[in-house]
Length: 275
Image (cartoon, rainbow, N blue to C red):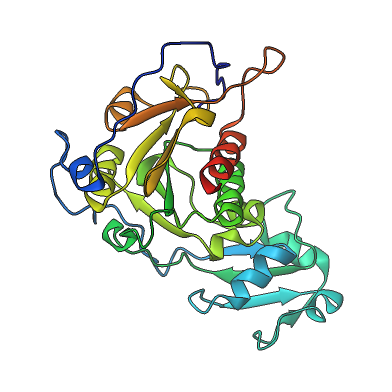
């Protein structure tokens, strides 16, 4: 989904595909090759700071999250979750010194490392209502954080990104996600098209959100698990990514405001898919 989502102009509606999940998996692009390459693994040198009350508290409650150093002001330390590591009590200026300029830390920060990631094959649908989100070169960490929040709010089970064209899942993303980074499985892949093939093989219908989509989102009727695919800020879905989608849909918007930010578009689409 791009920044300039056009309003939905009346167009002849194409008949929606009615094949079952098994037939969707047999697509002409599928290589049936496991999409396990390109995963970001935690490395000793990949330490970073998570900061802000919601982000740090969620990280402290996540048993999979490494807790290396916890800094807190005296007042922030009094609000820590039960069984948290003992914090180093310090002044706000000391915390600011360790963070990117302008970081709003609310008196608390946690030094940690990236979470480990599994292969896409672990995303096999459990129910027909399962949704995963695929981002095609979305690069703004604030947008990534906001999309993670929407994933958590509307029940998406995972967020999939391209390894070389996405921001690191560091403190900026964690702060923008306000804790959702600890609850939504993230997967970095080398190739988005191959990842979409893998998702099709697993039984997901690949639904691309794009201007000029042949179906409006309110008219879309889901029949099973969905992989919602959104494109980069400004340029939208790439041609090859569109070709690996089973359906392209658009958002109906007004003439007053015909475009939506990718994170806003993700929230609207995830809400619609959750109904």
